[in-house]
Image (tube, rainbow, N blue to C red; front, side, top):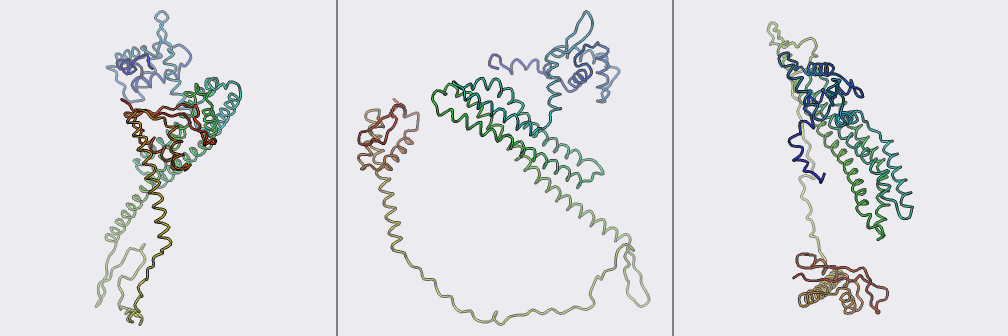
Length: 443
């Protein structure tokens, strides 16, 4: 990847490396018919004509020129031509191209297999790290690199299943005479099944946390620092594959509310449609009759039951009012507020203590900054014990001073912090040690 400019090199040959749809389907049909054997030009022409007929693009007037151009294009990277024997065969790139598509389309979801693979990775890693020196690089070459692609592919298959479920829903929803509710139920069930697959896959991936624990434990020993790049590669892979699994579940969670919203909108439209149809049925089928000395009377269709449209007599309704609703309510006594003097005094003392602590810390920080400004450098470790002695052994003030000073000198454009892992001790504090640290001001 670093030896060539991939974009620059692929740009003029892109359509030869990646054929168009028609050429690609012809290539796949050839590989299906003649995967490991040679074939002649007539057999190629038969496959081309069959593919173009299936695509509805057959045309006799340009057929000869079209077929020649396809064969010439495929010879660039995909097919060999033996000029003496006048036969063709697949180049390695063409075979790999077809096999990769075949593998992608034929692969399926295997959560149990994934769990076995990760369990095997964990066991082989434990055996490799038990040796002296640890054989991490051998483990990566023999086990991790060969299985990581297969593991990542399983997550991609799940994501592809989500896309296919959504595409199928969009396709079926446009079909006439479709049972929408049944279709929605089928799609929802499919998404729920995929989410269950993702949960099962995540269960198999719990071994990644055990692998992370083993590798992170190696970072605590300085002799393993040369293996830092390999350790980070495995840790990053485990994190990425778990994130991809989460994205699949999140994607499903975002799709299902939209399906439920579609169901609600469909039901609303269906209700409006049926209501409109019912009203039109009444208008078309209802008739009225009139008898002598009587008003007109509507007669509904036979399939509609009779119901009363108006009430001849209105029934009076009375509202009951309680006497208490008119009675004057007793006044509410004002709430008497009291001040807790003791609690207030305690809070005041705590506030003063915090202010004094903050003031002392800022004073020591200012002293350190003055030293750095005037001399250009501060030996922090002796200064730490100086603060500790000046505050009568108050470790809290010394630690907060160190934190604030490091934060204030974190700008790499102005200051440089150097750490030496050799310990610095003071006789007055035998149980306390620091690394040698120097803070310098950049010129």
